[in-house]
Length: 180
Image (cartoon, rainbow, N blue to C red; front, side, top):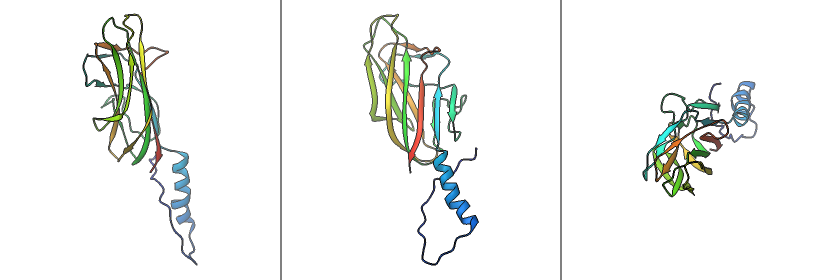
């Protein structure tokens, strides 16, 4: 699909007559944009080692469920969703981490252009057991992205863990354009 431009409202003047071409370009295409918003859900199918630390690592997403504007690549910079349309986006996701007998917390953050957004953090305590996995979910957070800006999900643990996807619990990130 061709990426559609965000519609720009027009103010009409008295006595003005519009052509079919004008209505197709300005009314029809605006409605089509609203019916086909930029959305994406990307997820992880391969395990990823996360070393202990305070800065964490971007989650690598090697699969795509939906990507209406082509903002994600499964092979190149696959931790990123790159905005094709400027605007406000809702971004959220979840990261499952395997259990360990050490460590006290697991964290998930949203970053824009590599910078973590302070208010976009979720944290859960780690149950100190090698058999208890922990999933950290971050609620949808609104962020502004210009064309070319990218968003990532960052996973952090104070003990080395493996992000181990399985058929019932995979790391994922969902991005939805909501406003210009």
